[in-house]
Structure formats: structure tokens, C-alpha cells
Length: 242
Image 1: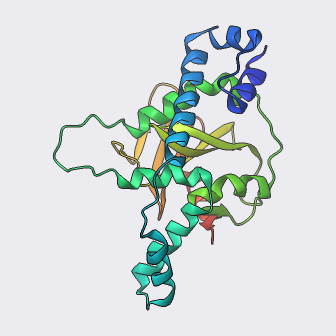
Image 2 (image 1 turned 180 degrees about the vertical axis):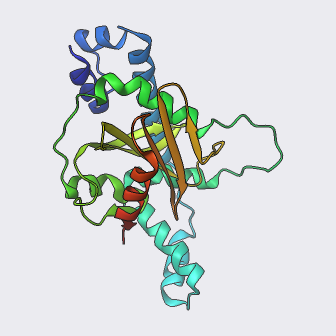
Image 3 (image 1 turned 60 degrees about the horizontal axis):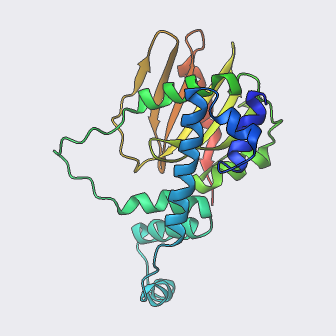
């Protein structure tokens, strides 16, 4: 089983018990970690779907619909309704209930290390993948994160659009064509607990992190790519999805 087929089957069912899938899963440490991450994602999704709904929720929603709303209340209600409209967004929404106390010495993962390691581990797959992604398809993946692309004219070719695990929670992962090679783009919910930087680099990759209304835009590319130009192009092409 080649790497592309292994990744596709892992995304479809990380609990696959077939002999060839189990063999591919144990072929190397990267494959083992990839399958374990997907299994944890499944567990998180299952837990989120079994969250108990408060008995008073229905009454509160009805009251919100008939009561005057301030601008802040309107934005708050819109986001929660968007959550209810998507199973994937349930996971992102569940992290909103975690309270992070400033001053505690908690080793939050560093956004730059998470991003570059993610790109590095999946490079053998992402360097060859081409899913012929359309504007409709990419916006279907972005919708749970409250955003979408206006068009694909300014973005260029999109090779891949899917969800991934990023620092223990869901994120959108896109791969688009840059001027010199492929560029990895992550949209990570803004409430994800991370150590933040605006720019980062190592011997192979460099990238930028931009704060947006609902998410953080994380762009990672090889060193020869003008990452600042790519960030500007992607950011200007995104708009809020309603």
C-alpha cells in the first residue's frame, strides 16, 4: 500500500482492521502517530456528540429570538447557531468551555512547532496529492470555521482541502500552489491554547501567523517561497461565511 492510499484509508476509518492497513500503520513511527491522532480525533468527536444539552436551552433560544439584541448578542448567537449547523464545529465549540487562567505555567504547544512538524510528517503525502479541489469543495471544508474564499482566481490552484488535528483539536488544512512550490495553510480556531509567534522558521520551512475574527491563519512554506506575499493573498481572499 502506497502512502497516498494509506492516508486516504486512515482518514476514512482509522480503526480499519484489514491486514494491509495494519501493516502500513506499523511501517514507521510517522504512520503510527498519524493513526493514533485520528483515533483521538474520533474519540473527541464521540465525546462532543454525547454532551448533555441543558434542559433550559430551548427556552433560552426562544427567548433570544423574541428579545431585543445588542450587536454583541447578535454576533454571539450567530456563532452558536453556526456551531449547531456542523458536526465538526461541535468539536471546535467544545473547546470554548475550557478556562485558561493567566499566569499558570502550562506548557501550551507552540504554534510554529506544531505547524512545521505537521507539514514535515505529511510531506510525503502532500507533495503528490492533487484532489482537483473546486471552490465549492474548499468552502465546504472552511464553512465550519466561519469563513470561505470569495473565488479561486486570486488563490490559484488548490491541491488539497480537509480537516486535520492541530494541537489536539480540529483545524482546516489546505495546500495551494505558490510561486515556487506548494504552500500549507491552516485555519486554527482562535480559542485553541497555543504559544503564539507572528513569524517563524527553521532550516527548511518558514511561516507566518495572522489573527482573524474566528481563527488564526497559519501559513507554512519552503524557504524559497515569499510567505508574506502568500499570506496577504490568502487573507484578502477570505471572507466571513454567513
